[in-house]
Length: 135
Image (cartoon, rainbow, N blue to C red; front, side, top):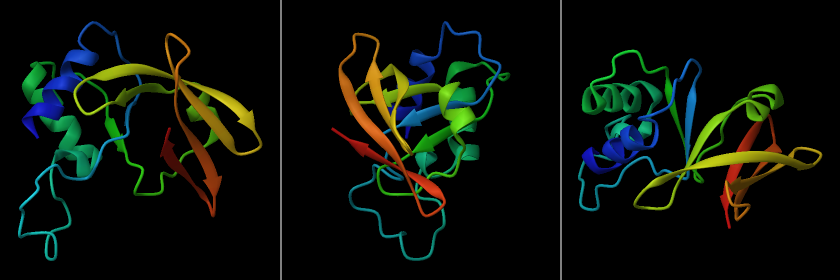
């Protein structure tokens, strides 16, 4: 939890954020040997917006950071196209977050790129929500 919250805090450190931040390609938990998955609804800071936002605020010392939403390849993500087009998004590669840009590629499918134009993944609309897929 500390590793990913620190990486997120570093990625958004110099940004003047006034709208929600999405952290793409994160898992709900990075604990490998946990025995709590059956009874708990949250497994780590990346399992919910409130936990992730609180962790990044605490680590960064910036209490005015807007909501930070984790977006996983394992869970549907409810949003609309207007929000995708304007998203403050960052892609997690397992070590660091890099700025991510969405480009609509077809009906209901958004391609995700880093600043250099490298393809990172896609978000596809299905059954009322989007699913993230890494390349």
